[in-house]
Amino acid sequence: MTGETALELFLGTLASEVKASVEAMTRDRIVERIWRKDHTVWKPEPEEITNRLGWLHVAEAMIPRLPEVDSFVEEVRSAGLTQAVLLGMGGSSLAPEVLARIFPRRPGFLDLTVLDTTHPDAIARVRDRLDLKRSLFIVATKSGGTVETISLFKYFYNLMLDVRPPHQVGGHFCAITDPGSGLEERARSLAFRKIFLNDPEIGGRYSALSYFGLVPAALMGTDIRTILERGRRAAQACGVASPGGAEPNPGLLLGSVLGTAARAGRDKMTLMVDPLLANLADWVEQLVAESTGKEGRGILPVAGEPLGPPDVYGDDRVFVWVGAGKGGSWQGLEALREAGFPCVGITVGDPHDVGALFFVWEFATAVAAHLLGVNPFDQPNVESAKIQAKKMLGAYRESGTLPRLPATAEQEGLQVLGHSPAATPADALRRFVDHVSQGGYVAIQAYVPPDQETDRSLGRLQKTLRNRTRKAVTVGYGPRFLHSTGQLHKGDAGKGSFIQISSDISRDVPIPDAPGEPASSVTFGALIAAQAHGDREALLQAGRPVLRLHVTRKVAEALDRLCEHLD
Ligand SMILES: O=P(O)(O)OC[C@H]1O[C@H](O)[C@H](O)[C@@H](O)[C@@H]1O
Image 1 (cartoon, protein in one colour):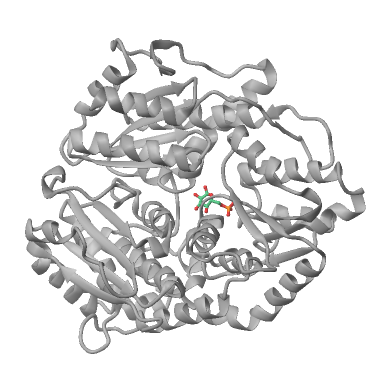
Image 2 (cartoon, protein in one colour):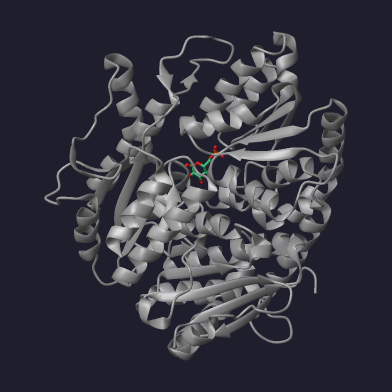
C-alpha cells in the first residue's frame, strides 16, 4: 500500500451533516472547480487565490527538476560540506524539519539542522555545534524578506567571514526563494553556490513538495523521488470527483469532516500522529491554522496533547489519528468513539507516504476552507504583530530600551509581568485559565529556546491545564508560531486566551546591519523581546486576554515547579 491514503470515519452525531456537505459539494462540482483553479470556490475575487494554486501540480512539475537537485547535492558533497543549517520560518522550514525527523541522514550525506528561532541561546547553541568550514547554510524564504530568516543569514554570513576569505563565503550559502525577491538579488551579488527559484504560485504552507521541502531533504540523502511519487498519486486520488465508491477522494472526505465539524462548533481538531511520522503534526498545524483561521472563523489544530479519557474533553472536539503501516492506529481512541466523539483515522503504507499526506492535507484544507467560506491562501492577520514589533525595534534603535512590564508576583524562578492581583504565578495562572469560557482554548506561547527538556515540561503544563479546564490547550514556540497559529489566534472568533512565557537570555547575539558589515544596531535578544511585546499588543488590540510570565532560571525546572503548584 504505497501512495494510498485510507480513511476510516466514525462520525457519530455529525454523520448526517457531513453527508449533506459532501452532497452539496458534489452538486457544486467543487473538486473539478478546484482543479480548474476557479477562485469562486472560496471568494468572488481572484486576489491571492488564482496565483496560489501551483501546489496542485507541483508533484508532477518537480520530477524533471530532480536532476538539478541531485547535481547540487553531489557538488556540495564533493566540496566536503557535511553540515547543513536551514534558516527559515513557517512554511519554509516546517516540511524540511518533518522530513529530517522522519528520515535519518544517510551516511556520506549532510547533517541537517533547522533553525527557526530568534532566541539568542538557541542560535548560540547551533553555532557552537558547527564546523563552519564544512557548513552549508540554506536561506529559505519565499518572500525573501522575512526578518528572522534574513537576520540569521546576516549573522552566519559574517561568522563565515572569520574563517574564509570573502570570495569563498558565498560557496557556503544557497537560497530557495521566489524569482525576483530581494534575496535572489542579494544571493547573486554575494555569489551564493546555488539559487533555487521556486514556482511563485505556491504559498509557503503549500510548498512541501517544491524545492522548499525537497532540497534540504535531498542533502540528507532522503529518497525524494519516492516521496514525490507518493505525492503525485495522492494528487490523482484527490482528482476523483465523487467522494465515496471504489476510489474515494481522501482530501475531499477529510476536508468535508473538518469543515463540517467546525461549522457545527467542533472546531478543535485534536491531532495524533504515529511516531513513525515524527512531528508531521507541526506542519499540519501551520497549514490548517493559517489557512482557516480568519474572518472570525477557523479550525484550531491541537497537537501534542496527550490522549485522555473522554471526560477531559468538551463537545468542541474532533479527533484525527494519522498512522503509517498496520497496527495500533486506533489505540486509545476507542473510548472516545464510544463516547460519541467524531474521529477520523488516516492510514498510509510507510513513512515515504508523507509525500501523499502532504498533498491530502493540502487538498483537505482547501475543501474545509470552502465550507468555512474563507480564502485558504492568505494570512491577513499575521501583519499586525509584525507592525507592532517593527515599531518597538524602531524605538529601541533610538533609545536603546524596549518596554518592560513590571514583575508583580514571583516564585521559584517564575515572574508574572504586568498587572495581576495574584500572589504567585500559579495563582495568576489558575485565575486566568478558570475564566476561559465554553468553546474557548488556551494557547501557550513560549519565547524560549526549543529543546527536548523544554518540550517535555511544556507538554506537562499543557496536560495539567487541559485536565483542569477541560479546554483545548496548545503549545507553540515563539516567534515560530507567529508564522503558524499566530494567524488564527488573531483571526478567529476570539476564542483564545494566551499565556506568553519568555526567558532570560544568557548570551546575546548581534544582528549585523548588513552582510559583511561589522556594525550592529539590534541584537537577537532585542528582536525576540520586540516580537513577544509586539504580538501581545496585537492580541490585546484584537480583544484577546494575555497573561505574561517570565522565567529567570532554567525553563524546564521553573515550569515543572509551576505544574506541581497547579496539580
Ligand atoms: O517564506 P517566507 O516568505 O519567509 O515566509 C515565511 C512565513 O512567514 C509568514 O509570516 C507567513 O505567515 C507564513 O505563511 C510563511 O510561511
